[in-house]
Length: 422
Image (cartoon, rainbow, N blue to C red; front, side):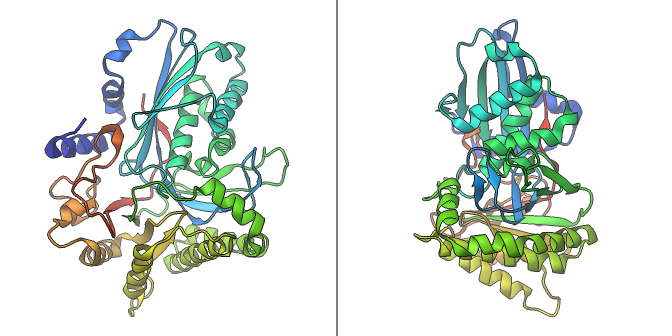
């Protein structure tokens, strides 16, 4: 469905406002389910969840156990506010459903043939301790309001959302959140970190059964309220080489990967945790950029080499380096996951200046910057037009955005983890 620009903008602002108020969250669920609620089987159990993206500052790259999704090193990330970027999932369970069914962004997805999804389902059924759940089919509806499989951690938010939502359906209490991170990990490694807000560590663990490979919150989202994040969307398309295949190749062929995991990451994790707890941005920024650079060096050290960044990605790095090359010191820290899109961590006091610089360099001539910057929370001066909204389950509307370079800049901040909204 094509949503008129004004209506779409208003819808995005309503959703952002509603997520601030628990008393109105039911309205979101009603809009999602609509008349379908009246047609559900009498034994149906349903829940709706939203989950955020997380952006790693110490990267996870490589598994020591593919089946259990056990990493070769610890990692650490910041959870982004779900009001700007989120996955949303509604699950309905009923014995009258003969099998599981799922749609993602309006497209049908096979559940039974997806080993990761089935691993989450069977593990949660065992945790719930009710044999009868195995007789319930699931109807799953999920969408992202940002590009899927483009290096923006959509699998992390999506599987975190799926895990949290299904746990609610199965009646698993919130007191088992840390155990749930181990379940989400089996769906998508980084998903375990999106269940928590703030800054989150994924402990690689030592046990061969993976029971100690869990995500733990270092600080919550209120600890460093000045922390902001800019996302430069360089690509909306799927990656040529997905993260799973890329990791497998790196584990097999990269000598740098093993050295980083064993010699570099343990010390870097200690330094990063110390910097975050002390709110030492200079140390945080240096570690963030160094780890991103080293991660992509491992990608280049892989045979055949993995090229996740592109010319625009490198142009952004040059602009951030120039922005930092002043007597004020380091004011912004870039980081890149397995994709060309840049995430830039910075403090509130430098947020507007950095954004203005990026808009000046990358917003094409003839474009209104207020259409180029997506700012649903009103964090910047660019939100006065209400901003471009997400068009339903199809995600951002790119129809009026440039074909090359930076497509859009998303203004956000560190925020809360996955949550049940109905």
